[in-house]
Every structure is written in C-alpha cells, then in structure tokens.
Image (cartoon, rainbow, N blue to C red; front, side, top):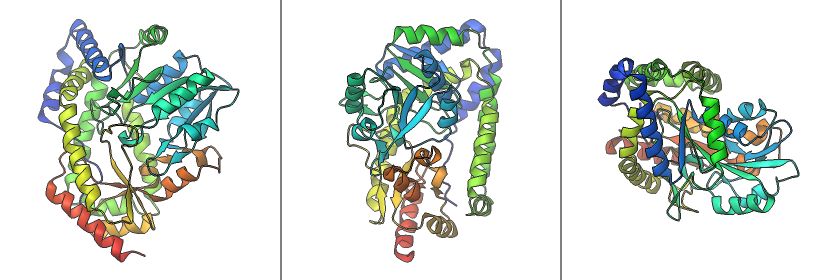
Length: 401
C-alpha cells in the first residue's frame, strides 16, 4: 500500500544519534547557538530561539506578549485543533475567523469581523505552506493596535514578495517535527525582532535542563513506525486503523502517544541542532523537488479533486498535498484502500476549530473539514508511485457517486 506519509530518515540521523551522549555542555551550547543564528538568517529576522516544540514556542509567545485571562485571540476556523486547549489553558479566549476553502487560509475580511474590544492578537497560519494575506492582516492589526503571531509550522521556505514567511508579525513559530521541512525529531523555533520578547523568552528557558535522550528516542520510534509502514502488513493494518468506526479513535490515540514521546519541555539538544543545521542546508533543494512533484500530481487529478490554491499571496512551501474531493470522502478512502492507496480525511488533515468552539457561521471551515483529503506526496515517493496514485484517484472519481 502507498502510505499517506513517510518519515525522511537518513543514515546521517543515526550517526548523529550515536554522537549524542558524548557532547560537552559547551559544545552543545555552541551548536544550538549556531543553529539559531542560521535559522534567524534564513527567516530574515534578528532572533531565533530554539524551543521544545512548535506548541512550546506558541506558549512562550503568548506569555511573552502578556496575553492572559479574558483576552481574545483570533485564530483560523480550520487548523490544528490541539492548539485550542493550549490557548484556553492560559485563560485566553480563542475566536475563530473563517477560511477561504480554496486556500484553507483565513482572510483579512474574515478576521476583521472577529476583532472586538477584547482582541489582543491575531494568530495567523500559513496552512499547508500556502502564504496567507499576511500584509492585509498586519495592516488590519496595526489599525487596531494589536499583535500578529505567525504560525509557520508548515511554511518554512515560503515567501511573500521575496520576504520570508515568519518575518511579518511580532513573532512567529516553526515546528521541527519529523515530517517538517527542517526535521529534527521534535523541537520548534520562535522568531522575532522584538527585544523585549527575546528577553522574556530567554528568561523562561533559562532553567530548563538540556536532555539528549528524548529526541533520540523519538527518532528510534519513528524508525520503528517507518518499518511498520513499509511492511506488507500495513495494507491490512491501515484498513483496520482507519476504518469509519475506528479512524477517529486511532488518530486521537496516535496524537496522545506522540505527546507522551515528546515528554516534558526541555532545552533544545545538540543532537537536534546538528540535524537542524544539516536540514537547513538542504531545505531549498527539497522544496524545489517536492513543489515540482506537487505540480505534476495537481495536473494529473480529475476535476472532482480541487487542489489547494497555494500562490494567491506569495511563493508556497511544500508541506502536504491536500485537495477537496467533491463527494463522500469516507467512501473515497475505503475504495482507495482496496486499490492500495492510503488517504487521510477529517481530523487527520486539520480540524474545524469553529465547530469545536461552538461557532456555526464559518462555512469555509465546514466545507474544508467535510471535503479535505490528504493524498500521498513526500520525500522518497517515486515517480512510479506518484503516477499510480493519480491513476487510482482518476479511476475512483469515475466510479464513485
């Protein structure tokens, strides 16, 4: 079976893992500082601070900007639902702004109708690597005297008029999870030009222990996961795990297990810094390769699959290939599995955070949640499998009602 995702593992990752226990504290600190400097340069900002995860970076940003109980934060109505508890845990009220179902991004107009007297910031996501109207949203924020926080977890390498995503708001966050452009098996990065935020963040991070084992453990578990995905038994397992009855439950269990592996927040490790520096050097070549495959797959799909519109406001970065299927996505997945193709649907793509929060006036998010399908495209996908994927989807578009 062609899996929906694969982990881009390299022998060099294992070599770095073997080095992890032997580094001195001074050498590790120098490696982390070098990674932060290189990341800041890549994003075009003065400061980059390595964190335990992208979510950790978001928490540090919210705390550093002084958001707290009763303050409102505008968020996309279609994004990662796990961010909602993180926001609410601080007493902050998340307010969803609808998204354009063609791009999956919120717009300046949809944000404008959500700004009220208690709004303190706008949380902007460049979803799936597609730049949103960050200039329009920043102009709106400036007019109201509120901050913009960019979520670039999917968007390292994306740009708007030649300026990198992550350099527009008061701060931005990036993720370094295993499927991201700069994959360090966990970790995140906070970028900013705000000196006060830098000082506050550094102070909060000062007491954290630096542990090499957690990211190495995550890499080893990802190796096991990758072996399972490559096994012939995966075809049977996928049908059981992602059935209509079990799919949502399995996805929740997988995320919970991922959180346990992530463990408690610790300082960024030397192992992660060395991986990050190597992946930074290869990021542009990776993006060119995957963007070219994205275009091939997009041109190969039938009209019932409406691919994400990615370049309305700038140059996109590849994260995942997601399209809207005009039909029953559950039936599509079952039929695709019979042909040896694993697709992601529903919350396995993103979440309707408007519905989670009890809002019923976000039709763009509802459409995206009902129609979005994650189609295999990743590092290591062969041209043959890419053609086979497109052929299966063309056939199913004709067969399904």
